Length: 111
Image 1: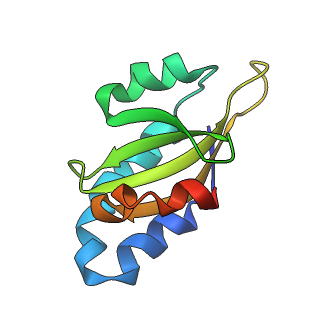
Image 2: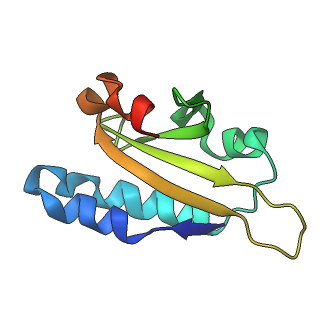
């Protein structure tokens, strides 16, 4: 899968010293996603197990929420799955939030 935009990951772990602990987990997430070729949510679930949930924003947009760094952070993404084997799907990184920020649910109205 192609990740749009990977620089959001780097910005997250460099923006605040308290978030630097997320770097190894985000690098691992990035590497797994880069090597994936998902055709549907079931394949994402097969890859990440209980560390991914599928939700809808208040606007009805389907989103994937990944647990990062032992559930301390949430990565919210939109996934455009593979349509043909020759194409590369895309994962759009929309938000990286602390668990507390995620629980406030402001992101649901914004996405």
